[in-house]
Image (cartoon, rainbow over all chains, first blue to last red; front, side):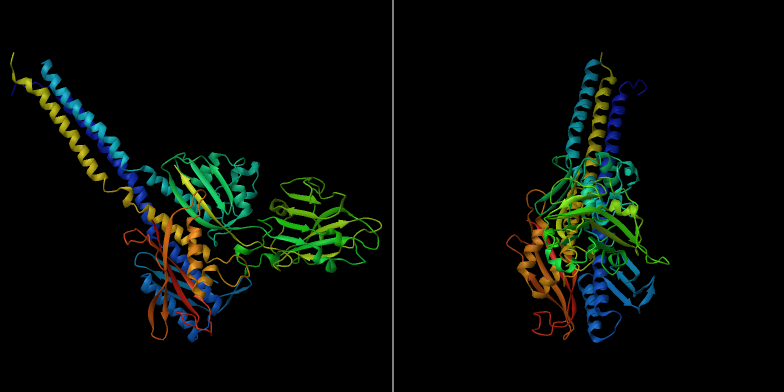
Length: 127
Length: 340
Length: 170
């Protein structure tokens, strides 16, 4: 093989170059697909509207019952926690405190806990 | 040698042609619009619908051509606590494409390194507002259902005449805005009357009922409209006249129409009124009055004729009482964002 | 005239071709994993739209109104009113109306038996085959105490119920 002619190797080199170019193209295409996928999954996975809806429901509860503890309010509280666990797979809990003076207005401290296995949300809000 | 080279090169070229012809097919499978553009459209939708924009106070929509650079982000929501409830003044400012250029929309609402094309539309009933280019095939899209909050109107018609006329009239009629009452935090942001962000609209109709019946007359002369304020937190609270360019007509600050004619009058018109007066005080004017959440603002209509030609007098409270101020219901609309 | 270098250009041409074709094969097989159908974008758009519609139906139109449209529909068990308003909001666009379909359930707790029950609120229409990629959106509704007549089927006590809507494109 001593007299092997190496003149033709540029063809293989060209082939390699083309292959490399394709490889990078594929990388870019893959990334662009990932952008859309992660956005959509991020939006679907993060329960933004669920948490907002739960807050509204709890504020409605506070409007209606305040911090009283009686069978009626306990029943509504149990509705929210039981149905959340059963239908939304989320552990939900909330407490309503006695009204405090917050810049001249009597507001109740409300703590909200939400956990659906992926997203955990805790909040203390004066309402 | 030449035959050998030809064979090898032909095989290489054939393979290259095959590969190149496969590349477009590879890209076609990934409609790019379904990927990045949808994400951008979603983001723009969230910014517009769930955010009041920046700066919040004074609100961005009050910035004129000179202060356009200070608008950092365009958002249409009434407040951040009320997603999907849009303020009509913000909506009107946003869809004014003689004020915002395509670059403004890109840098203040869409954001992104690529100069995206866009088409944003808001439909409510048969009312359609739109900015941007016609839609090409293959674009990123999001649709948001919204409610639109319109400003209230104080319509003072003939039914108020017994209440607001007196034979010992001083020919002055006052519309009073008590900010402590209007900005009370117990009223949700979606239903609040906030003169700092929304126009104040006072319309006196059936003016005939307010005319002096003992002195037969068909009109009365509206001499001046003045603004007075009182700050109850001061030691000796009293009403003081607010310095303002009362004699200049400026539709960006206020509009005054008399008898339904399209003529714009200044605040010292001195013209006879036969049937109605319509005053719209824009938030840009209210912001010049340096009012806080305790101030009381008076709008005083002065009629000066000797002998008196009108018996109008009294104070009309611009508040949440539905007989005093008509607050329109929230309107349902749909906001669509397309990006490509 | 005949020497062993005669094969070389041909061989290298074949080698280059094989390399390129193999890369294309690899590229195609990797990129086809993520196609738009897998990116859940239509699901995301539908879910956002559905939550918006329920949230807006749950927003009272005026400051002093007694309750939102959604509360009124659930309280009166008015499924036709609910369906027409929901689809009206959903299918509204700047141009031609969209073609979305829905069905709805209300989940409530029976306090006497202490069990969670489902009440079919709006039955799916004919376009429902079970193969659609439907999304589910929910909204809490609080019902007031109503002594008589007892509200069917939720009962008269004040309670919180969950409205669940299944939304799909036919």
